Image (cartoon, rainbow, N blue to C red; front, side, top):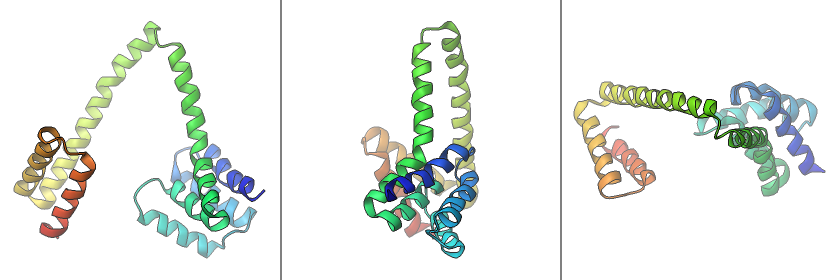
Length: 176
């Protein structure tokens, strides 16, 4: 029964919290503080602060923590699944619909229009990252990191996760 309560406490905010974590935080607070009484307002604010300090989606981090606190590892798994389940269900149903109409000329035309928009958005994001690093750490450091990353990933076929860890280490040693 506890696992079902944990599921509902995070599934309902996942359905109603349109707009991601920031819009679902008050709904999660209502469930875990007011409805179930698992946390006080002070404890919830501490969990929120902890969740904000870590990378990644806030709602899933809070769900994992609160689920673990209430139901152990199984509770954490149930809470995280309940948080992502509404999006997962919607994506699977929409992908099924898209797959059904994949040969439609309208769908093909839509994907032709979407691809360049995504490419432009990724290009703008890359430019903003590059210009921000150029301003913050200088052109030589930025060029070194760009060239080293390119060589490591494209020529030496090193996994991007290791390149990112190396860049973080480089920044910690040489840019702090």
